[in-house]
Amino acid sequence: MRLSHYFIPTLKETPAEAQIASHRLMLRAGMIHQETSGIYTWLPMGLRVLEKIEKIICEEQDRIGCHRVLMPTIQPAELWKKSGRYEAYGKEMLRLTDRHEREMLYGPTNEEVITDVIAQFVKSYRALPLVLYQIQWKFRDEIRPRFGVMRGREFLMKDGYSFDLNVEAATETYKKIYESYLRTFRRMGLTAIPVRADTGAIGGNLSHEFQIVAPTGESTIFYDGKFDSLSAEEMTFDVASNLYAAADEMHKEDDCPISGSDLKTARGIEIGHIFYFGTKYSEPLGAKVTTPDGKSIPLEMGSYGIGVSRLVGAIIEASHDDKGIIWPEAVAPYKVGLINLKSGDAKADTLAEGLYTQMQNHGHEVLYDDRDERAGTKFADMDLIGLPWQVVVGNKTIESGTVEVKNRKTGDKQEIALDQVLKLLK
Ligand code: ATP
Ligand code: MG
Image 1: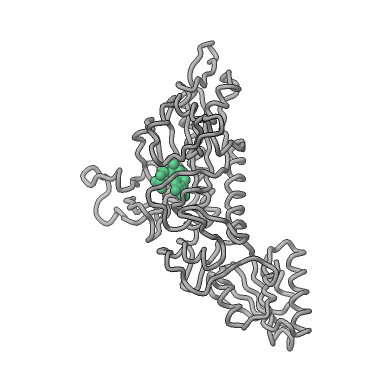
Image 2 (image 1 turned 60 degrees about the vertical axis):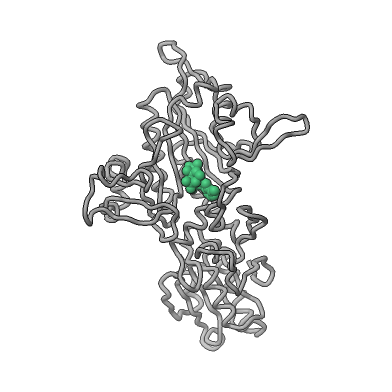
């Protein structure tokens, strides 16, 4: 993509309304635009990151045999009356009336809809286990929308729903998804801590929140210091769920099995949340199957959420410096930023264009700064946008055929021959 023809409305000034780094940087890097409180337009750069995150989530869901669907954003109130949540949900739910005076709502979550689908189509234990998921916009009229996309009113969520014959099978499904969540977040460059969560209103007995440590997190988490030394391979359900980790509302100092310096305290951002809740929805909505011995029983269910749009902010909270964003390669909007310091110089333009084409031909996603701007502006914008690699075409390229390559994360710079660039990016 050529920066001269792109739509990245970057800001030089720090927007006054933004209190945390990710919100400031997303606005400054031209990723989002706020329409009204908690509601955003995703601009091209922001959307690319959102789509990278979605793709990783889908790959990991599909890997463990989940099936993607797409449910509507607008739901009939009737289903929620059956489950008993219509009144209980309160003011966070956006309620609508259609032209026939029928009560509708903009879905804050989808247990009712998916259970209704399953009630229609799944009649036998032979169809189980079954996990369906979607990536779809949700609306929750939060009391305090804030921190940009971190706590929006309209936000993108991956929500999955599991259906099993009995508690044992449902627990197996839960474990499988728990481990797959850890892998999903790791691929985005994040180390998530699975924290025991309150099963309160929803009931059931298994629930975890996936939290990442960041000073601007909204929750306080308490966890066993052993988490910090567990390798990715060691982070299985059996190991991790037996280590103590709880958010403030669940943590009771007197009952805590960890003491002294082994207990770590940090601020956490909740990026995912999983629940096992048994037959809470299958019973009222009539999602039943016949068992091998011919009985008819309600399905055992769980639900599994990931804050897709929140993750964009959370990743920036975990990875930035005072110059801007530092994208982990897996979710970066582009892999390489190509800077032509001498735009307008025929020789520099030819060399930069050649490199641009070559990198693209080798499958690299390149953002090419071909604008007629000062070097300082180009460097500052590229650091702000935060692509993993910067390749600079300048005087030395014209004189001796070398380019400067900078790693955004480490800051390391090296001067290499033009024909070595592709090898380095591999
Ligand atoms: P929170 O405690 O942050 O309000 P929640 O428990 O209400 O979260 P869930 O209903 O479990 O959230 O939703 C699944 C995921 O969706 C959360 O883990 C979070 O990452 C994300 N999420 C929830 N509310 C918002 C929001 N208002 N804006 C952006 N993401 C959200
Ligand atoms: Mg909430």
